[in-house]
Every structure is written in C-alpha cells, then in structure tokens.
Length: 618
Ligand code: AGP
Image (cartoon, rainbow, N blue to C red; front, top):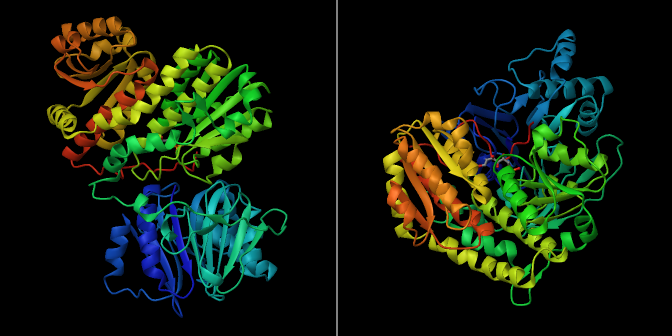
C-alpha cells in the first residue's frame, strides 16, 4: 500500500511527481504529500487525495525544484490526518522520508530515541525511522547512504523508502524490503525517476531497474546508480528492464471509471492471456512455465492454491477445474491463514499462488514458507516483474494489462483463463480427457472472448442497469451458485460490498437451507446463477424455495431458458458454453451490476473507502 513517486534531474520535478501520484493513487488515498528542493526544502502535505494536495499547492506554495518526491498514503500507523501524512522530517530538519510499509519494532526504537532527546509530531512508524537514520548518521559521522543502511539493519518490518538529505541535495536514497521500488533511468543518466511501479515515468523512459528485497540504491544526478545489499554491503549490478507497458493502457480511454474500462477490456484481456499459448486447431497448449516443470505438475500429490480476495475466488474456480479435468486433489487456502497455520507441505506438493498485483504481503510470505518446506511454487501474476513473479520458482503472467480500479475485474477472468489452460493441459497429459473432449474445450475457449463481448452490449447493459436501479437501496443481498459458479457467487458479493458498501453474502445454493434462508423475505434480493449446464434442476428447486418465501430473484440463465424465466423476477441471459467455462461469462453481469449500483449510489467506484489496490501489509 502507499504510492511513492520521485524525480531527480533537469526537469521541473513537481508535475512529474503529481502526475505520478495520481497514477499511483490506487495504492492508497488517505493522504498525500510532497517534498521539493529549490535552495531550501518545501514540504506540503494534507489529509485526502492527490487532488487535495494539488489544491494546497495551488494556494501559493512554490512548485520549483528539480528534485523531490511525493507520497499517497494508505494509513497503517496513525489516523489519516495532515500530521501523519508523508513526507516526515527528522528533528534537525535535514532528513526527509517517504515510506510504504510497516516498521514493526518502531515502538521500542521510538522509546530509545525519546531517551536520547528526540521528539515526535506524528503517530507514525515512519517518523521514527527518519529519526533513527538521523541518529545513526550523527553517531557514525557517515553519509546518508550508510546511515540508511545501518538503520535498516536495525528495523523489523517491510518498507519501500526514499530519503533526502538537505545537506546533500543532489541525491536520493531508496531501499526496499517487501514493498516495490522501480527506478526509471533517463537518457545518459541525466535524470532518474523512482516509483512504486513504472506508471509515473512511462512517458519519460522505458528503461527501469526493479530493486530486489534487501537492496538499496543511491541515486545521484549525472552519475551511475549505486545499488547495494542492505545486510552485507555487497555491490549489485542491476538488470535494466525494457518496459512494454504504454500510456494508453493506464488511462481511462473515454470511460467514466477505470473499473468500467477494465470490465469492457475483458474480451481483449482474455485473448491476450491465451494468445501464443493456445492453438485450438493443432490442439496445443504451450506454457513454458508449465512445460519446463511438467514432471512436477504431473507427479504432484496435490495442488495447493494460495491467494487473497478475488484471486482466492479464482483459486476456488481452479479447484473445480483441476479436480474435474485433471483429477488432481486441490486445496485452496487464504494466504493469511496458510502462512500462520503451520501447514503440512510436502516436497511433492505444487503450490500455485495467484495475485493480480504480485505484491500482496500474505501471498508473498506464503510463497517463502512453501519454498522453505521444499515445495515447488508456481506464481500466476498480472504485474510483470512484481515481487511474487520473481519469488516463485516458475510462473505465468495473465497479460491482462494494468488494472487500476481497486475492484478486480479483468484480473479475475484472466486468472481463470490461465488456470483453465493449465487444467486442460494436465488433464490431457494425464489421459483424463478424451481427445474429442479436449479439442472441444480448446475450440470453446477460443469462443469465450466473443461470448464475453456479447454480454457487453448496450442491450445487456440496459437490462443490468435497470436491475441495479430496482435494487440499489437494498441493505443486504444474497448471491447463490453451485459447482463452478459457487466461487462466482462469492465474487459477485465481494464486488457489491467493496464498491457500493451494501452488505452481500455469497453461498453455495444448497447451503441456503442451512441458515441464510432465514434472512429471506420480500426485501431480500437474491442473485442466483442458474445456467443450463451445471446442476440446473437443483438450482431451479433452490429458486422455488426463495420464491416461496417472497424473496426477489434475479437469475443469470443460459440463452433460451424458459423454466427459470417463469419464476424469477428478472433474468440476465448469457451465451451457452461448457460448464467449466461458465464462470468466465456469469461473472460479467455481476461486475456490471455492482458498477451501476455504486455509480447510482454516488460512491467512489475506482477508489472505494478503506481499500487499496495492492495490499502490501499483512
Ligand atoms: C478485489 O476486488 C479486491 N480489491 C481484493 O480482494 C484483491 O483481489 C486482493 O487484495 C488480492 O490482490 P492480488 O490479486 O493483487 O494479490
């Protein structure tokens, strides 16, 4: 969480930093702040969004300077207010810091610093860290880089930091452990950019270095970057990566919200996920991360899928896929529970982790644990070069393109696409799928983007919008599905909760009788996934049970359905496909529904309260 953007070079730093913070706002938007240096330090910070910071800067604050950094915060220690906003300054006023992460032992360090005469303005762990660096610098009479290094060896926690020293105003020191830092390299080393991801500097350079955990960099104008290991001081020769992302991908492109744009991007995103991997005509699924480790997959005693949130829901869909198509036992785990449960992991287990951002702290920690226990870890990520992508033994990217809306949409469907390819590949290799069935799946998979596009027409949108207008004031909603569509019910409920703040629960439809049915009355909208293939008769009975209790039924049905239509209050039709592929279609109207309800309720769709896109703290 939290976004960091900085610049050192010959251009005005302010516009680069402000624009960068706007692009990083998905990482947190509790407060924003900036440091600029132009013969003296200028710091402005405020509770609220980057737009509030801009307003503050427009009230007469100097925007001059060719060096500086900014921060957009997701609060961990200390409530979101002006004082707790970053940057934070050391007691002497010389050192300034921005920080993404948590310093766990800040309290004991703070007590020690107080004994030595330090005072604190904020409740943050970050202000403790900048004063620790100051104290170390004073004690050791060393330069900023060394002081940062010594101080970081004393802290426990996670961080991406940028530090500036007013007495040496032509350098920035950055460091990472657990939270990402990318460094953009301008022409001839005349300028450098720092950021939590590459989006703030895409228009300036495509050359970037991603710091690894426990690395720090000293960045000086017109000089080479010096990268060191924080714990043993060894010098690192960085790998410069060529960025493939472009600006268009991270802008709204005419849509009102990123979430809507990302919903509509799904036909393309799904195609991009299987492009170059799936060839339905020749019956080949090629995925180097799987191909290179095929023995591990084929000999796995079980597959353990570890993820959080929406990615965990994609993992649940994969449980059905792997067990059904490839006949491998699967367990799906919340990363946060898995890592602290002392789980039984055997060398013959394959761990698949799923993460859009590739930075989720619990998922990352789960990978490290699984590796320690000798398991093979396969990472599915969207963000190229992310921590999880680098930490896993092997993996595959979803290639969904940047997902900026906090509510995950195209990440979910592309994760399922990728997991379906793996399940089909294993099913074929293990002889569990007949050639005819396998080929049929491949052909059908290639039709999915068209079928998703068919759900993103003005006609379907109008139906969904109307349903949204009828139920937008509900206080509670139930989402029901069976089999492959039970995880879709969970995902539908999560989407509604997170952006419209309406309480919603997802359930396996048959579980309704074991409790939730007590909630059903004429005020309860129940969204039921009732597609033809997949326990249809059973679902119809569940719908009858809701009807008998006067619940309102909104059903997602297969095109041409007549039975459910007779009993449901509203239906949304989806094109027919194989049961295993239905989640890729049934999800779409539920995403749209949440979107429209949130817009009608005037909620901040792309930046829902209390959330952040990348949860880099546990
Ligand atoms: C999804 O809409 C959520 N915002 C959230 O549950 C998210 O899926 C979760 O935090 C996991 O993120 P990741 O995929 O980046 O690891």
